[in-house]
Length: 140
Image (cartoon, rainbow, N blue to C red; front, top):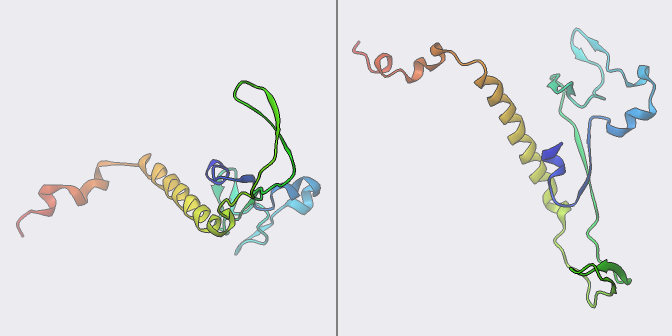
């Protein structure tokens, strides 16, 4: 969730059915599995942090960029309470245009990191045969 929630303006993150699962009964939330795989994907492709082979589904909600022309309450550095009024509207860049590509890239990096961390736990000397100078440069 840190990868998804760490992007500017993100207010919510869900995997699979997300928050909707709290309103369901256990029988409605169950993703039946058969010999050809899961029949539904309420779990969003992850169960207990392990992928199931189903598509990984993530939803991210963004806070709208604020351009407020009403007086706003705030404080100064010395904690003096003030009301201020923006003289012009703010013209922040629209996060929504870039968010899809950015989040997809972040998730891909995190998934690859998980794969590499898993592989690093299963390293044995024979896995380095490709890099063994004596074997790769031996005379025929």
